[in-house]
Figure 1 (cartoon, rainbow, N blue to C red):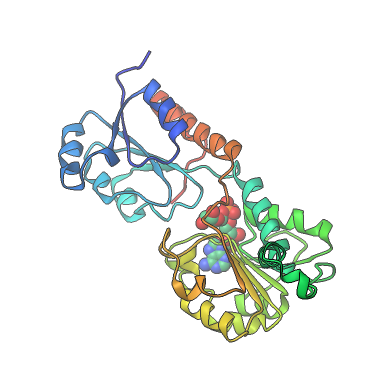
Figure 2 (figure 1 turned 30 degrees about the vertical axis):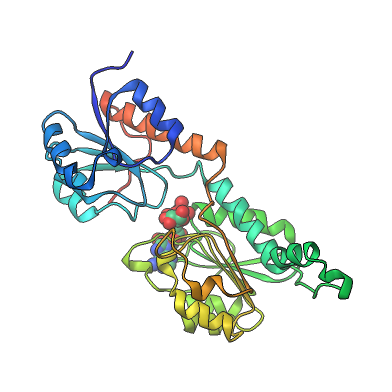
Length: 314
Ligand code: A2R
């Protein structure tokens, strides 16, 4: 039976989870309301509704106009869509969905490392289009004894490292602080890039990582280097990446994330030495379901007055 607890749903982050929340609460779907009428919905919920659920990477700012808002259950691990200046000032608590997506994102990272090193997407086109009849496909690169530089050795970065070791890759990393791991630490991204054959970004979004992957870093990675980003698009200066790829300052790249998703700059999509994926890191049926479950469990904990399962400390 649906209880009368009110819940604001900000966007359609996962239809299956939305349907389950519809069955549990009295839900209000912000995305079904015209932008100009949203404030009316928000005002009508004032004093009655204290919780919202949203994709972690985008929260319509009108949500913060809800005076009684005390909790946002975010679907996703990267919480760059949340305005923490507002949540902090108002004491609004936030949860996200870490860990349950580590495996899926790390699996995709390995797929991108392999696809980039062996040029798999172009190889498929080459085979389909009959070019093989005119001669063999150009050689790829082996992984054994190469160095994978991980920018952001956190939960997901660690899962990537564990998968990369059996392929014979050496692991190096850069974080702002050295961790307890035995992998070789670089205190700057440029030094990591210089030491890497493959440079993989798995950094959060936000101001502290904006534009960190720029031309200086690509030049340090060098003409045989492969650059991969599965963190946030805002950490890459996309035009400088396009220039580095066009001028062969690096060999190839593979991206799953972009600064203005779902828009991808033409300067990147016209290049043939880059693999472009539509932000599918955590997009498996199982992982999205697990993320949805965590949103549901955090909401239940909030409404019961129990500790949140995965509260974001900010
Ligand atoms: O810097 P530290 O010591 O806090 O290490 C974190 C590192 N990191 C940075 N490294 C260099 N420069 C920065 N400005 C910087 N900011 C953060 O990134 C930490 O090792 C890593 C993030 O790891 P976790 O917090 O465990 O996040 P998780 O679950 O691995 O996800 C990473 C990102 C998400 O934020 C989404 O944007 C994307 O993957 O899905």
